[in-house]
Amino acid sequence: MGKVIAVANQKGGVGKTTTSVSLSAALGEKNKSVLLIDCDPQGNATSGFGINKQELEHSIYDVIIGDWSLSDIIINTEYKTDIAPSQIDLAGAEVELVDVPEREYRLRSAVEKIRDSYDYIIIDCPPSLSFLTLNSLVAADAVLIPLQCEFYALEGLTQLLHTVDMVKENLNTSLEIEGIVMTMFDSRTNLSEQVEAEVRNHIGDKVYKTTIPRNVRLSEAPSYGCPIFAYDPGSKGAVAYMNLAQEVIDNG
Ligand SMILES: Nc1ncnc2c1ncn2[C@@H]1O[C@H](COP(=O)(O)OP(=O)(O)OP(=O)(O)O)[C@@H](O)[C@H]1O
Ligand SMILES: [Mg+2]
Image (cartoon, helix red, strand yellow):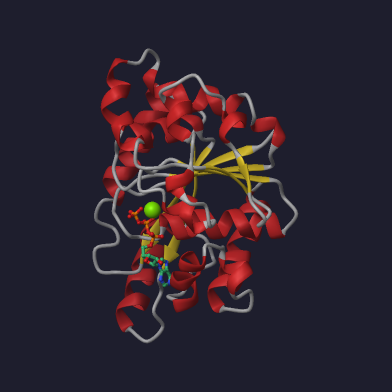
């Protein structure tokens, strides 16, 4: 049965989507069957795989709000990853979900039907602790938290961990912390090193050995509509995400 991992942090721009796309593609490179669910109305993971959001007839919106199944909307990409795409109409789901029965379980029940078809299902969450993030945490076996190597890295983490605890107590008792990955590490600054050391001191046992470096190739790849392994497989960013994927596999 596939493992479902939600990539979440309510802070914006910390590397959730870069991690979702690159980790999914890396697991694919390692011959795992992977589905990436884009659960962010921004649809960055969708365009990161070269999918034109404007041309989508159906998306994750139809699964969460309508009665579509994931298999109806999944797109097979040429990058060893399937994707359940998202577009801006998903922003409306936030409000529409208020009236939907079992609203926290919408994504979970959709995922249950297809999880046997994949080794890994990765969910890219939006930058908020919204219904969409809640749906993702309820659907997941584990949450993977990207933390940017910056001064305020730990700010917000307490709130996120509290939310994870609440979900665990009330909605999804089997939810685990998959791990915390430090992102955008800049070896030229002392700050990155200090922040990494501080985070490892505080919560070291949950932090992956792999740290993702700041690497311009990672930020360029989405504009070519492909994951880093199709754009520059030898880059530092690609190597780091391969190492992260191996750690995720080794964690079981
Ligand atoms: N390791 C990295 N090196 C260089 N640039 C990076 C790296 N990781 C992410 N970026 C860039 O930083 C920006 C934010 O990254 P990303 O979109 O992955 O964050 P996010 O948490 O998904 O953002 P949001 O909260 O808006 O969904 C993007 O422009 C991305 O290309
Ligand atoms: Mg994102």
